[in-house]
Image 1 (tube, rainbow, N blue to C red):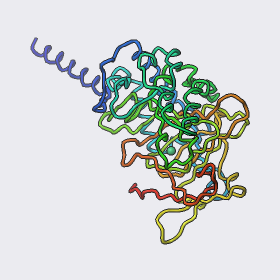
Image 2: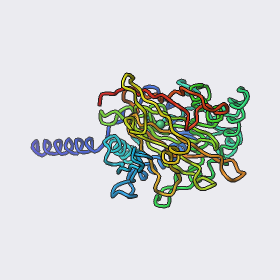
Image 3: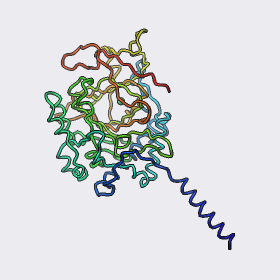
Image 4: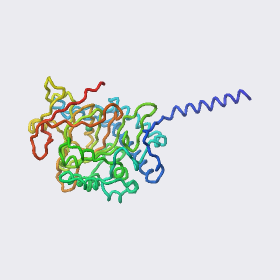
Length: 395
Ligand code: ZN
């Protein structure tokens, strides 16, 4: 009897050990508010969050030019006039982000303890675009975030006009999104209206004069679904820091997001097409690119593109046709030039956005500085003269 009992107990212990090995350990950020954990609105938002993450996993892993993922544009001009591309899954930071997405999707119930609707979030204000959106989404109505309309009504001049254009036309712009044909999971506003309506949006450049272009400053917003400041805030999985930061961006038509860079690597998948065909342009090059001008006695480098000779070769069109997934390596210099558009409808560039090392070193986005004004109307043009001075990170 005694021997039988011992072997039974050992068997139970073994079973417990094996199930423990299968389960990942999720450690949440310290500021998770789980008070509204299982309200109906929270359930809808959580379910759409998971679908979004599933879709991003698919973007990173579905065969599209490479066997196990997309062939990403990593430089729009490699210094010799060619577009440089890489299989994105060759990057270790991307591999780790995919692994952590897998852990969440495999054990959503365990991961959910790190989910917070951000109804009560102290770090900074998060917005919904306007009150009409709250009428369209019960989740946005329940969260009742302050609106970008109210935010921009406090501003003045061109900033107010641009901000109100974005905020009032927000839904109409999002509705123009279309998933690339080769992906199965639709994560656009069409399938996930509550997530796009209710995730916390940030008018990131509204108060940043360094971004120069006032229409851009009012006409840009981003939101974070997963990451250190998003809805799902996981600090570590099995002891490993979770660097994945995943969300979306919207940039209004007729705006230029000036040249900028940052420490974490970044990817974009555009969801909207340009109404004229090719007016959604972007640029990316490595910090040591031959396109930039260097002087031996200075740390930084200059960007000084000639409008007719350089710009057509530096910027390439972006659209969700399956070939324009982009990946920016650490400190890569990038810029987005979203043209006016050819339709009378409000339009803009809507993108799935992500970073992969959101818990390493310095996270802030740095703009290259305009050193010479060539235009009075918009003083950070694609052809203005800029100086960039990225930190030399130890790799
Ligand atoms: Zn960036």
